[in-house]
Length: 115
Image (tube, rainbow, N blue to C red; front, side, top):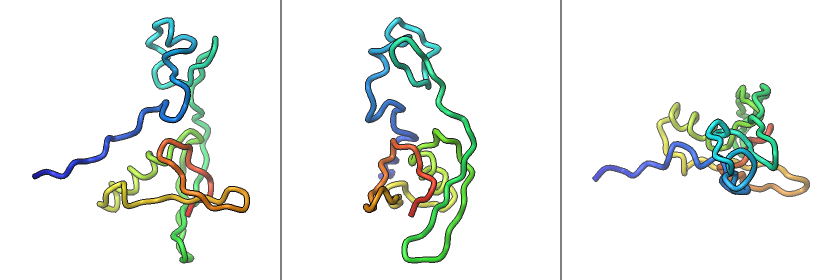
């Protein structure tokens, strides 16, 4: 029996307001696909270049990846899993937020320092 593979990427609007109910998408504008839609405005996701430092927990090893501001955790997981030949559910990304360390969800933008 073939292994079931996870979808390529979670929906863009996962965890956000349903964009189909707001702005241009509600009026039937199909050009709004892949964009952030809000009352009266359509915005493209940010394509500003950035870099993310990934490090292995309890290790000195780290790698810096060039990303865009709007790159999600899922995008980085997919890229790493393709290169390493592992499943996406094996990787977990943690980031420091204030005095706490929390796991990043797949639909979130990737932070700049991740363990």
